[in-house]
Amino acid sequence: MGNLGIYIQVPFCASKCSYCNFSSQVARADVFGSYCRAVEQEIGQLPRLYESRGIGQRLLDFSVDTLYVGGGTPAIVGGERLERILNALRNRFRLAPSPEFTLEVTPGSAAADFLAWAHTQGVNRLSIGAQSFNDMELRSVGRLHSAAAACELTRQARQAGITNLSLDLIAGLPHQTEASWEESLRVAGTIRPEHISVYLFEVDEKSRLGREVLRHGTRYHAEAVPDEKFTAEAYEAARAFLRGQGYIQYEISNFALPGYESRHNQKYWRLEPYIGMGAGAHSFDGERRWANETASEVYVQKLGRGDSPIAEVRWLSPQEQLEEFFFVGLRQSEGIDLALAGRRWGAGRVARWEPTISALAQRGWLERRGNTIRLSQQAYLISNEVFQEFVTV
Ligand code: SF4
Image 1 (tube, helix red, strand yellow):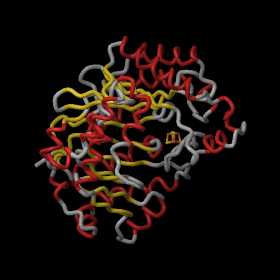
Image 2 (image 1 turned 180 degrees about the vertical axis):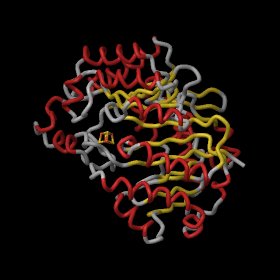
Image 3 (image 1 turned 90 degrees about the horizontal axis):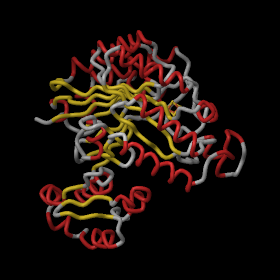
């Protein structure tokens, strides 16, 4: 019997950030009830839904050692609806002792009483979408909260008894300068959360801001997006700053005080099983990946009709599993164990990647120690180029 991660997706936000490329939506409050009931239905019907898509029921007997409620902005649907979903989970699954239970929170979306409720529900980790501690940067991308609101949220969370806090920051936001980024890092250091994620601002053509940047326009502060060189330097500055503050970089974008690495996210990088529920949620059992309908209306309708909300099931061949092991696992600073890969997918299959590994090591992008390979420090900023080498087309 193994362990399992569970992810619950709440895809609603109070407004759409200009850079957002997620499937989150700004919806009227009257859809929250039907959406949350649909998630409860999905949880209750998992055996039937999995059976109907040939997924099998093995994972349903695993014990849940990590739970992550994300979005979107989960708090927007309110504690009562979330509690019914959590009760459905408790009825369906066996919880491991001391599970990591993360709730994603946008500053301004969660009042002190909501945080107190979350604590009583077992939430022991809060992932806070601070993004920046500069109000101009926040406003320019349509965030509804201020830097002060993010600071206040961390204070209230600790007061509510939630002892493990994670802050998200974005390097390269419009109007960001070297000084404003240093200030955001300094404030984050003062708060001293147990965990910090630093993402590079991405110009995604599916977002409003991304489209505007690509056409060299000026709407959504597109002209104030720093160039790649700035963003790269901001990332390196964050790495140096956080290292100096005692944080350990355990993944390309993630830093933790010792012992506070995200157990849930590590499942993604280690190809461990997880089940996602809700619109657009993804699941993985080691051999198959499957995903629910992305549009929340379709997701709700399908469950209402008694149909499966699973839109796609994809079997991964052993070769594809091994490729994923390389390009997902190499995101971790500890790297990956080739001996482990050999035991799982066969030494011969792993040996076929030796020329690629040697070539990348010669370019200084990979380091090899015994059976372990990992990204070199200088390759963190060009990691996608390295990962592409492990994908056969
Ligand atoms: S809060 Fe997050 S999910 Fe919601 S619109 Fe902004 S970036 Fe997207």
